[in-house]
Length: 453
Image 1 (cartoon, rainbow, N blue to C red):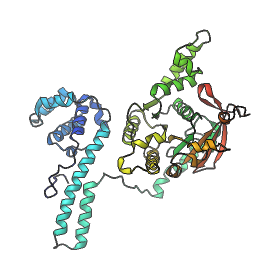
Image 2 (tube, rainbow, N blue to C red; image 1 turned 45 degrees about the vertical axis):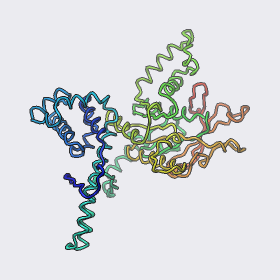
Image 3 (cartoon, rainbow, N blue to C red; image 1 turned 120 degrees about the horizontal axis):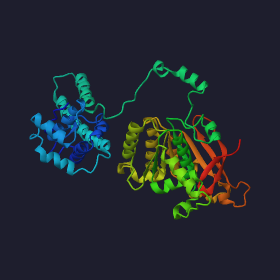
Image 4 (spheres, one colour; image 1 turned 180 degrees about the horizontal axis):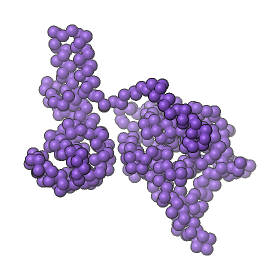
């Protein structure tokens, strides 16, 4: 349905995002390769303004012909096809470019335009269904079928369908995959760098699972997640780190500190010693980390779920399948929840955990989210945390495939015999057994290490 009829609804303007349309077209002219991020999302008829439809249709045809779509080339193409004056002339195209800063988040804007288009289609479908209701010459059963079909045609593709797959299709390559694992040609999971942890997680992080790492402040949550991310990146798999608490610079300082074995205080002050080889160690660490496919988005930009998905989609197109997605930390996403989800903290955190769990399935990539524990754990005699200590734990416990809590006895008991030891407590393991492993913890570098076998 492309010819929309809004008569008889009311005098309100139909849903539209003209500003997003302008930004998309300007972005495509400024950065022609960005077309590949929107081509699977947008069709020309989705634009509300007719001149915008003509411009996008021209860009679409030029891409099919492998022609450049910069300002000069697009102007020439529209002129040759007698469309330039129809779309507003050269001034219109120049205004698009001048009003656009970049093609950043162009796919996110495309979803907004598609959303508005689908809503317009629903309005038109609603008008048609009203007319079907008035037509008493038809059998009611036929009318209901036609009404359902009208609404389905209007919204087809707007909501993801539950894809069903036969057992035969699922088992294609199943035997071969097991054989490859038996021969050591295919790893059962994405290794974390901690062999005892990998053993409990069936070979490491699993691609479609959602992991929670929880702990009280100063237990080393960020350091632990960073160690895992660095190990995965060192194996050549891209990782993305959404840091809502630390800046990119702070997070990178931690990574370099652990890699170079130089205390962060020295890096922050710049007081490095040439005689002890610190400058040489720093140079080598910077070279190693710079070669790792690590991508960081920090809290200086407003990170919401649409932005996350857009960023992940872009990274996977440019760099291939991701090794892990890390979010630091879960509770800070609460204020990014849509207002219609209510003000109840448990509901809002439940929405956050649902979104993160679905992202692991959507991108076939493990999602690791850090989580804060409530203060009540500090008031108990046994301060080892449990799942119920996680702030807003109800839905988080349910959604997570694996829940890990961190505990260091020396934080509470300086005279403990367990100095330099961190307990990694697997409180929930959906596909395995819970348990505890111990790692060495080097506080001056915020680094976790395997204990000797």
